[in-house]
Image 1 (cartoon, rainbow, N blue to C red):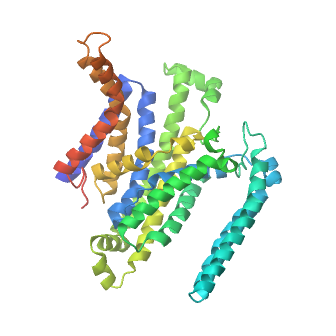
Image 2: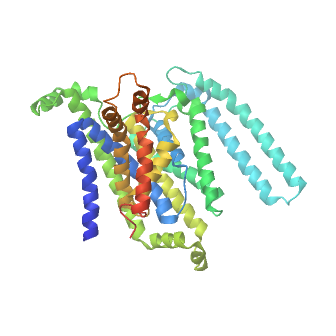
Image 3: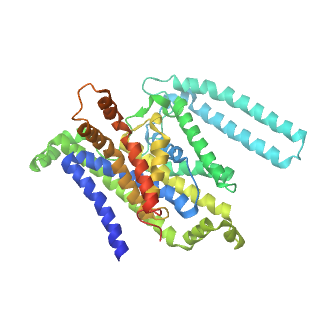
Length: 434
C-alpha cells in the first residue's frame, strides 16, 4: 500500500507541475508539454520493452522514430499522379532490382561451395545488379524530382486517413528492426548497439538526401490532421459563440481545442500500449523474457531460443517507437528530417527510462513525463536564474554576458545532474521493477 501511495504521489507531483505551468505561463504551453510527454512516454515504453524486459541495448531509437514519421508522408500525403507517371514506377522497379540482387548474392553464397569461384560469382552478381539498379533508378529519380520541385518533387503518398499512418509507422520500424536483428542479434550486445547506432544515422541520411521519397531537407509540410484546423474553428459561428460564453478568446479557444483533441488521441494510444505491455510483462512470455535477460546461459540450458526471443522483443519495441514517431509527425503537421538528433530521440529517451525505472512500464511513463517537463522548462528557468544572479553586475560585463548566454546549456547540465542523483540514491529508478 505504501508503494502504491508513493507511486501515485509521484504522478500527482508531475501533474501539479504541469498545472502550475498552465497558471503561470499558459494552458497552451501546458497542454503542449502533456502531448509531447505522452508521445515520449510511448517511446520510453518501446525502449523499456527492449532494455527492461530483455536487456537489449538499442542506441538507434532515433532511426525508428524517423521511420514512423516517414510513414505519415507515405500513407497520408496525397498521391502525385504526375510523379508516378514520370518515374514512380521506375523507382519501384529499381528497388525491386536492388532487392533481387541481394537475394541472388545470398543464394550464391549458400549454394556454391567455398572458394574463388563462389567469390567471383558473388562479385559478378553484385556488380551487375548494382549497374542495373543505378541505370534504372537514377533517370527515374531525376524525372520525379523535376515535377514541381518547389512544392513537391516527390512521389507523394497513398492519400489514406492519417490515423492509419500510426500503425503503418510501427510496421515500417518493425521491418527495419527485423533486418537489423537478423544481422546483429545472437552476437555480443555491443554489436547490437553499434548496428542500431549506424543504421539510425543511415536512415536519417537517406531521408535527408533522397528528395523523391519525402523531399529531403526541403521538408514535407501541410500533412493531414486527425483534428480540425484552428482557422476552421475560428470561422465556425457555433464554436465562436461557445468560446465567448466561456469567456475565452476564439483564437485561444481554437488552439486549446485542437491540442486537447490530440491529447485524447495520444492518451488512448498510450493506455492501449501500456495495457498490452503490462499483460505481456505478467504473462509466461514476459517471465521468460526476464529470465533470459537475467541469465542467458541458464535460459538456453532450459531449451529457450534466446536469439529468436531477442528478435521478437526487439521488433516489438522498435514498432512502438515507430508508432510514437508517426504520432509526433502528425502533431507537428510536417516531416523535417534535419530535426532528428540523437540527443533528443535516443539519449533523452534513455534518461526517461533510467530515471523512471527500467523494467517497469509505469516507471517509463513517469520518467517520460517528468524528464520532458524539465527539458522544456529548465532553459527559461535557467535564464531567469542567471538574470537574478547577474542582476548586480555592471552592464556590459563579460562575465554577465557569458553567464546569460550559457543558460541554454542548463538543459544538458540538468539532465546530467538528475541522472547522477537517480543513479546514486535510487539506482533502480523512481518506480523500480517488482
